[in-house]
Image 1 (cartoon, one colour):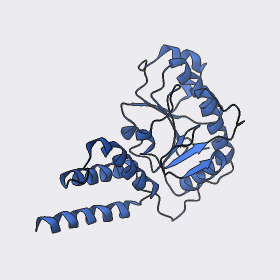
Image 2 (tube, helix red, strand yellow):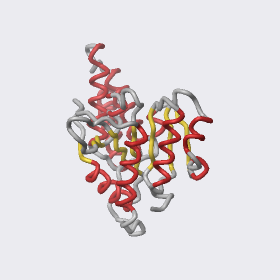
Image 3 (cartoon, rainbow, N blue to C red):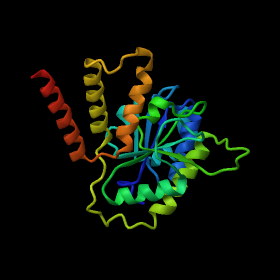
Length: 244
């Protein structure tokens, strides 16, 4: 697996430096070297993470720190959200094998892929999940599905390693990849601003759920860059018509 096109691992609000370090070990075991951290509870850099990494820290190609999920996924075309529970969000949902197959295919199309993991105690919340494209679960014993963070990262990274090392990533497809997430978030923000200005959110207590639903619809659509521009054009046309 080439480090330049390998999927990114994103840890959202990780709590313990030791867990971050063990995730690094799991990543390097499988040839993954691109790590992003969102608001690590105990801050960064972390001596405890470096110790727990047992040499993997020095082999990481990229460790980037972000304060929000939106910023961490801004340049990603497709983000897979790992979760152990069924969610009420209407998102595409697949098992791990299906997810890594899709990730491999989209990588050959030039897309930047990421797999996101929530914090140790609660996982990813619904607001975070609304920005991501696919929910992924790992098939386990129905009677006991509990994994620690590093175990979950290892299982995902190993599945990616197994898939990517037999994929010819030099064969770039002519299919158009989805727009990067910063363009999707900008579209969501603009649409929400215009809806607010036109009194779409009539009940304030329902607004957060409605916003999450809108973001879920737009990320689920896997819009291309051209489709995003078209959507902006539609909004501009509607605003212009209303103001005339």
